[in-house]
Structure formats: C-alpha cells, structure tokens
Length: 112
Image (cartoon, rainbow, N blue to C red; front, side, top):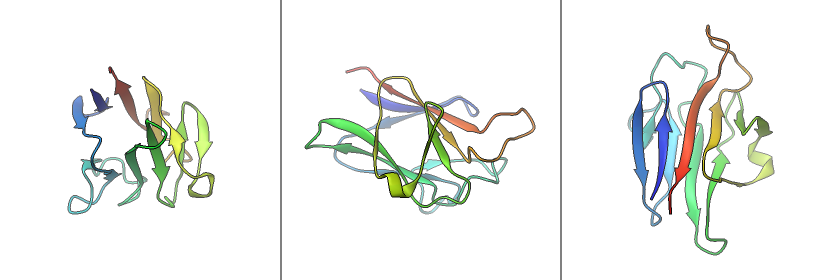
C-alpha cells in the first residue's frame, strides 16, 4: 500500500493507483491539503500519480512558485515526473525556509 505521510500534521493519506492526488493549500482542489501555516506552498503545488506503464509512483510539480525537492534534489515542472521510491522525502516550497529552517515535508511510503 502506498501512502503520503504529512510529518507536520502527523496525518497519513492512503493512495489508490486508479487516480491522481493533488497537493496544495486549496481545500477545494487539493486531495492532500497543506495547512495555511505553510503559506509559501502553492494553492495547487504538485501531483502524485501511479504510472501504469512504468509501474511506479511519480511526483509532478505543477509550476509551483517556490519549488519542490525530492530527496534534496530540486525538481521543477520542466523536469517532468519524478519516480518516487519508498521513503522519498518531498519538500514543498523548498526555496523558502520556515522558522524551523525546514521546508514543508511529506514522506512517500510504498509498502507493497
């Protein structure tokens, strides 16, 4: 089973392979809602989906203003989808540091 763990809110989101999941601050558009405290995260920041052809979960940045890092590597919309491995760290708004010197972090877990 694949899931996203929001380490700030201590919340887990179970992922199904048959649909994409939008990550962002907009409650109406996002499946994984980032709280207002992370104001530098875009309203619609990124997307996680299962690529049936490649048989892998992928992250796609949706032209976010403040960037994304996957396992400390900067990842932009122009880079296309990034394959996610078990325990991949997704850093949202990675170009902006919060008061704790950390971007907003999610962890991808795949225990299949």
